[in-house]
Length: 198
Image (tube, rainbow, N blue to C red; front, side, top):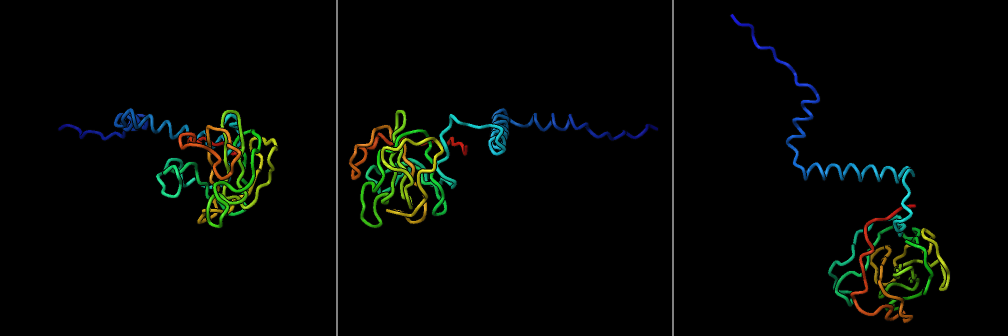
């Protein structure tokens, strides 16, 4: 009579190796990318990694309406910036060093239209930014501004259904005419998705 076969449990290393063998190379890259993103986020959150070369986050809110989305309420037919939703009064930050070129209404000053009466236009090295629908502007034309400086407060002015910041990045200089601050639709560019809270 032969002895019954002994059941053995596989080692942890064998189980892990077997599971990894079933994962595709693309999945591995995605997993490594996700882990990397979590590590960077944690490092930023704990102040271990400061990203001064990234633009400063424009406000403490959620960017829920991105650049390029088709719209029928803008002349270009697409959303020319990003909408960051936050509570009214939330600070608005300059995304980079620059000079304030203009503070006031943009496009229209009629109630419920345009970008409100406290929009801020800033020129930076090689591009311009606009910050609109603000409750109040905290800077003046001609004022130099540093990256991360509070320049306004989130508001609900102009063509706006709820408090938010409309941020635009424009590869053109401010025209000086608030009713037509920039010429053409091809000058508007995506502000991007990389932001530093510091």
